[in-house]
Image (cartoon, rainbow, N blue to C red; front, side, top):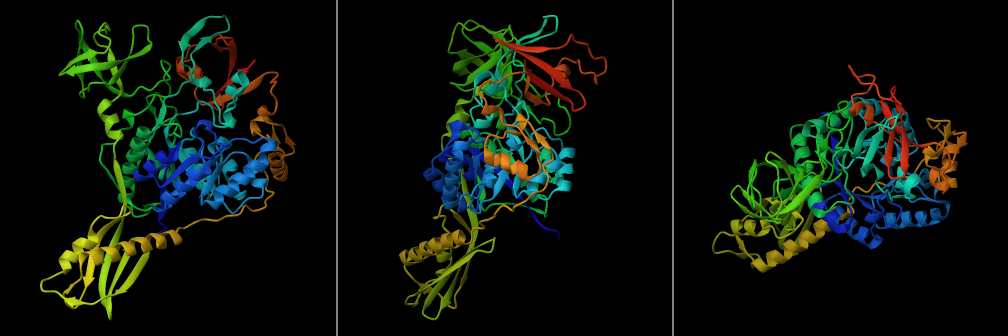
Length: 609
């Protein structure tokens, strides 16, 4: 048998409470924001909270990655270095970083992962990062299976890829719209989400081709079991859920769905295993469409998809439910695949194409009474459930347990008994205790087996209990309970001591970066980052856009695989395509943004005039 590959399900958390829940619902690793310098400024956490998380996660051999993935100003470097040492001291397993200046700091032996903000699209870029010492690389979301295979075949670094969640329309790390138009830098963690705003699309003659539409708003990523199997074959080992700003129900539900999906894949193969300990008991049916989603797409994994965008709304679509069969005086007749609940939130597109919603006051069979009794809905209108009262209430309760399978053994010693615990990963702990071995008047082994196997510890589940006695002995249950608890304490300590902590120091390298010259797209904001690229044979390094508050001239705000030409059936590669009067512009309030098209790369470019 060849080497068994470890497969990692990596889940997000905005705080320690969410992090604990994604672990209980099946995460093999969790990523969380640092106190500062994370790409989601609204999802930062204290050192004390992260330390609490590390202690909890490592019980299950779940790894904790801290996102430190903004670009950094010169006067922040010392603070970043101090923060990294603090994170290492509390046991954080790795840092997710974007700024190459971090590699030049005085670092502890903590592994670094290259954030998707590093724009990891090519074999050359990923191989460079591997040789620079990065232990895991987060791939660009836009990559196809073939592109992932090409990267995997030319590298041996661990590859991480997104499988679920919100999509940036731009290549990650290469979007400057929020900063250039609103002064809030995505590369500094404060994106203003200009991609979720309504725009007019205007041609060269001033004709409005599309009005007040969300032309840059993509659906959310969702990868199927078949997609994940194909990604495993392509070389991905870490599967990442997006959502460090999402609520608890989202984190529980989506993590549980992917846990079950990946477990099915692992169970069907002998060459895969999960990368953490334990088994989950989930007491609900996970459904990704029951929490925040803008509709789903598998993105560019198998080519350009038809379900890429949703021009009508950037809001959550929820789950598609059914139709309005008939409108009555104060209620309507509902026809759908699932029952509705009192208090549900329903949404629909009105006659003007606007996304609207209402709260359900009462349901009587197929009669639905909106809270707004004057609401009138057209017959045949499609309904979406964006708030599921019953599901949301269930998510507020305990919805999962996670325990590690162990075996218990008990045998006689010369002056008493011995107890031992072992797990399937080879960890073992044993204790001996002296006591008077009083012969029992009736059989005790089954009673003892039941006592030792009781699910009294939150971490462990006894699958088997071996009792090797020559005779039958009596010892009060309280004494057995005391010794069992003592053994559990020792076993927890044993697993903690043997936790497979990776320590790694970056090598000093001078291999060539894939580009000889870097403009503002290189996101170089400090002298250490500049020194890094110069050390790796870059001859010209321009500063990041964030280095200058006064942005002058025509610049590229974003580059994306999403293409409005294609959406309008005006792509030159499409049969019977229409010809538009170009250049095209996106217009929002006072902003008028020219569009350019790189047909060789099949990309759309948004410019600042």
